[in-house]
Image 1 (cartoon, rainbow, N blue to C red):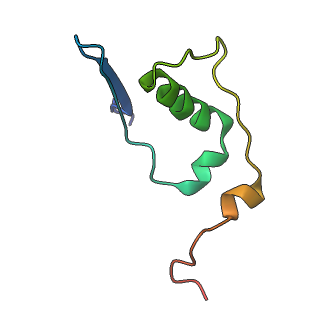
Image 2: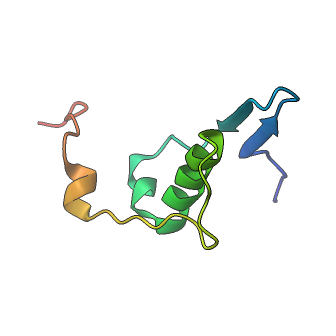
Length: 76
């Protein structure tokens, strides 16, 4: 069964202020997905009123980047 849920939202106020909400920060490994990072990075650019590139901001991470600085969370 599929249900509709809001994952992210954005607003621009009359005074020009911008806001962005996002519920996707639960699983660290998701940052390894190019599309996942792109949507959040593009939102940050939009919030800062920086032009978002036509195809979105490109970024890359490696498995080592993702593993760096993680605490053990109970692992021994």
